[in-house]
Image (cartoon, rainbow, N blue to C red; front, side):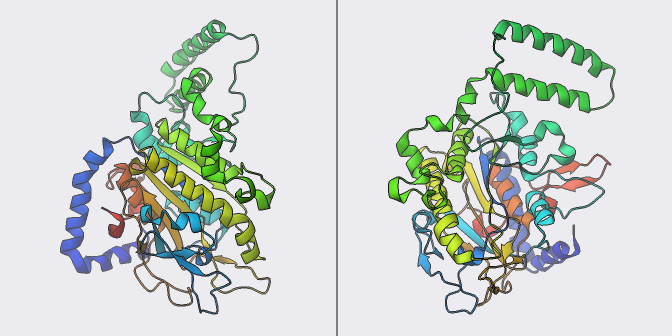
Length: 430
């Protein structure tokens, strides 16, 4: 645990009795939560989104920019350019006092995905791999990978092994080399795979390494991919037009129109695929939406390209999950590697900023419509308790039924706490 993280929790000891009661309640409920078939969808905004223009606007401030805040279905305000999301904010909350230490793309991406600062002596697993490890192996009926990354690669499984690596697919559901080769029918394929299994099993018996076992499991997953009926979950282009419209808009209102994407923009389709996957029992899905490194022309880019797309996709995802009875069992997290500077630069852009920014989280039984934490009138610093990525992932883990006291062991034998010992955010726990 870092010194800063230690001091934060030490300060929390000032309210020792309520704090202990809160943690005891979490542990008591963990077993019951784990019985549910819960999943998590991470909406990853690669490049670092300007959350001051989306979730924590500063009207009247010199840093406030061009956008106005609007009221929502929840007890908070968001950008005027997120009208559809405003209607469903009673299901989502915003943590407005994120204060993280990494404002470099690579390091920030690692930190936000793993809850650990990069360390040359150990490669930590991304949280999706942790969920795969804790929940995926217990879902016997799941024949497709338990961690799927849509639209771009996620971080790796670290010391948890390749069995829990992200399986990457395109936003259109395309999977390379998943179809059976021409002329190779089911019986011939079965014979070849059985022969391979005999050879690998014999090799594993004479090996002390975990790697051959992982290799065999990877082949087993590939075999399932080629033959499983659950592969239909990836066929997002077969969805009904009205369902696609929920995520992407229609006609002149198509969210991707300004980006030349038409009515089926990649991020909206990726979110639709995420719903199809969690509906099939996949415990963790990550959907990537890049292009957020807005050092220039931030307001025009947001207004015409980024916000119409995420507004439709987020509202469509929440609405669809709720209508299908899945929202209570699906945690949704929206974030990037950091925020962007409150001060607007000479190119009408915002630069990298990790001191005070926002993350959106909801679903999975978490409280919605809540603004957690606060930044000052100019957005320059947090003026309430600040939060780390470990606190976000500890909150998600709680909602998923993963106990916060779990410890994994790295390859060099070091104990690694779940989410670097982060604490679930009590304002979000129902």
